[in-house]
Amino acid sequence: MQKRTKWVSGVLILFSSVLVVGAAWFYVAMNDGIYSIISSMRSRPDLDSPDLRRSRARLAEQIDADFSRAIGNQGYAGYQTSTQDTCYDGTNNWKHQDGFAHRCTLRLTYFYGFDGDFRKTMLDLEKGLLAAGWQYNIHGMEWSLTNNSAVAQDRTTDRPPNQYPDYIYPYYKGGLTLDIAWAERGSTSLFHLKNIQAPGMGLISGNNFYDRRKLLDVSDVFQEVTRDHTYILAVAIIGHYFEN
Image 1: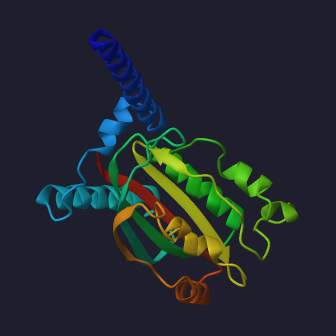
Image 2: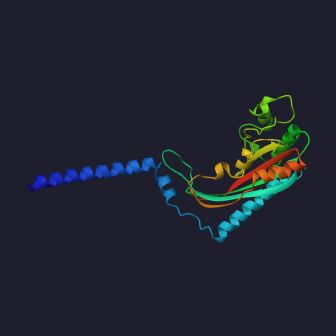
Image 3: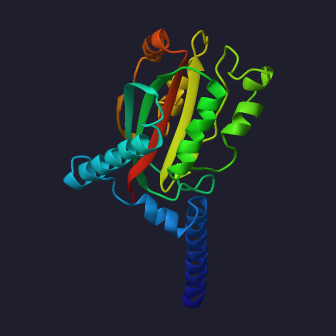
């Protein structure tokens, strides 16, 4: 009887061990491995720490310097600047792998006005970006001006038709990303001018634990710029100042 009891106990222990190991394996698999589990346990940054504030200030200075090098000497009329400063949790599981536990991102968007030959001005803008070390990953400005669905409606003109173009592929430099949006006097859609300040109205929907923004009323900026100029140009540079 005692041997039978020990045998039953052994089977139960073995069965329990298999269940525990199986559950642990399933948990690890669902969370995309041990690394992702460890990453998710990392602490959020101290938002009031001097180190974090210094990192943000350094990034803001770097972005300003890049704007000056790439755009400052091209003859655009500068107007206003918007800011989005956001910290958010990463997502690391079997569905999606961000590769970080937490990240803080700064986006500065500058608005300019200009006149003249639209196509030449935009191609010159890209020349300035490339000379300053920026690169495009998919398509450059020439492709965008020719193949963009809005622009392609009228390929005989040197300016886009009287509506907002769909999308301009971003440019990259080091850990920075540069986005471009534009519109012209008389445009009826200002969606991209608004969206470039804070895509989707939030960097990572639902995961933000810090979000400080100074966004502009695009309608007001549009009216201000196009009162003096034919075109309005928005350029945003985005970088990360914390990640773990």
